[in-house]
Amino acid sequence: MEKKAALFDLDGVVFDTEPQYTVFWRQQCREFHPEHPGLEQEIKGQTLVQIYDTWFSGPLTASRELITQRLNDYERQMAYDYVAGFPDFIARLRADGVLTAVVTSSNMVKMQAVYASHPEFQSLFDAILTSEDFVASKPDPDCYLRAAGRLGVAPGHCVVFEDSFNGLRSGRAAGMRVVGLATTNTADAILSYSDEVIPNYINYGLFGK
Image (cartoon, rainbow, N blue to C red; front, side):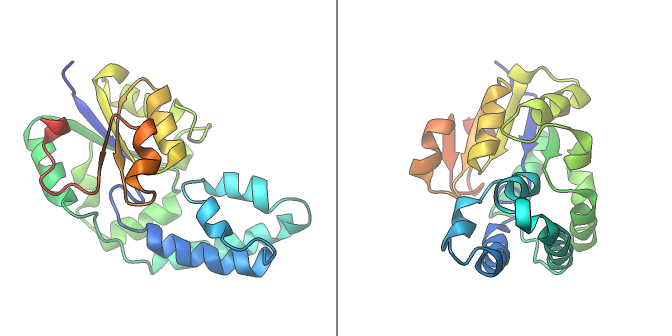
């Protein structure tokens, strides 16, 4: 079936930012959960809401405001480097008439930092959906289905690019082809959740062709 739209998660898929988030969350976890070493690895790919609901509830609920402020400050000074090969890949997609969208759980505060770092960013995509655009977080398929609807493309004509387990599950649940990026988790770990796995976009053909 012809593929008409490419839908991209943001962190670990468009930008190679996951190592920086690991540093941030290692600091928070050591401060608030010293009894659970390695927690920053367990929460990879989870939304902020999911992290808060699981690890910062009850007595730690009051810490959320502080962590959110720290995260906002951190994201403003992060380096937003594209995953290797992405700029060339997205240019080829658009030249080939493929619609493109970002589908991220990041909020608009974060996206303003992205736009400041990359003034060209918004011109690369036909749509950008953030956490403000959907209710249910990944692995729920709602975000990808909304993106397909905004582009006017049937789910079966979409390809999702994801790196996290929840994101990969979301793309699958939406009935879309799923390409896994082995940037956050190992290729072996995400293989069963993906139709194909790539390390980056270097020499990657249009939808594997």
